[in-house]
Length: 268
Image (cartoon, rainbow, N blue to C red; front, side, top):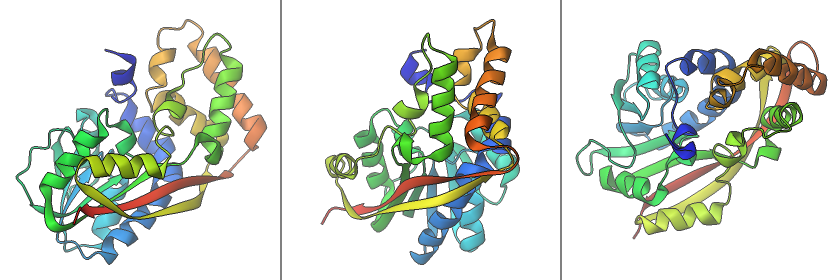
């Protein structure tokens, strides 16, 4: 498996750590915000891409209980975990670049922090356009630069200090690697979609401890792949955790997190 593929695939061991340590801190606050925006569009048929373990799925179904929601993810491990946690949705394993749905069947396609993982975004956006009804909307979010994410920046600094021989660059390259609205607009246009609005959103994340966030990022993301082959993996995890605690503090910790929300539709 290439580094690019490894950065985009989750193993079966990751969803539990992801759900426990990262979802409440990173994803639930933005899920509430994005679900509110989705509800204002009054959708009836919704396709969610890169649904993960279902943080946005649940928020959406709470906000729009009458909507028919298909939640999809590339990774079987995430689909298994998500379907168990949010059975109100119809869960499907699906590649965003080859969606297994007919044309023009959804009036809203939704994606929270998933587009960064698409290897060929124009191809994925073309599939979004294909499955969207003529008046449908594509609502999605992407993280801002790593420096704008208090937890992520602290973690990457701790990781680099602890691994001077070469720390994984997953966070900067993938989750925080798609931050320019002009690039996003060009990718959408190449797929026949028009960007109609962008909005930068900064919310506070609250974690039970810096150690919890460190555990989530070390074991609940593809960063874990870089540690599995190291003899000093446990020592390294302890060092990163201590450095994050030194920077963020003991006990419950908070940090700002910035993302951009995009809304697109068929080109006129």
